[in-house]
Amino acid sequence: VYPETMPVSNREVSFDKLADSYQKGYAQGQRDLPKWLRFLGMA
Figure (cartoon, helix red, strand yellow):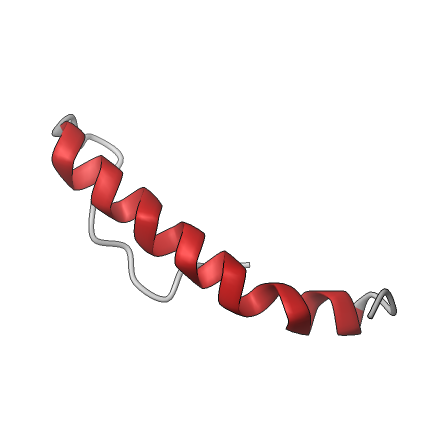
């Protein structure tokens, strides 16, 4: 599973940038969860 976008590097230390990246990833996970559950036969 890969992120739709990767707005930060592995050297990023800015809390605001990291928090924004986390929120974007969390939202993607919420959108993709039904697809993954169907793939796993759990939906």
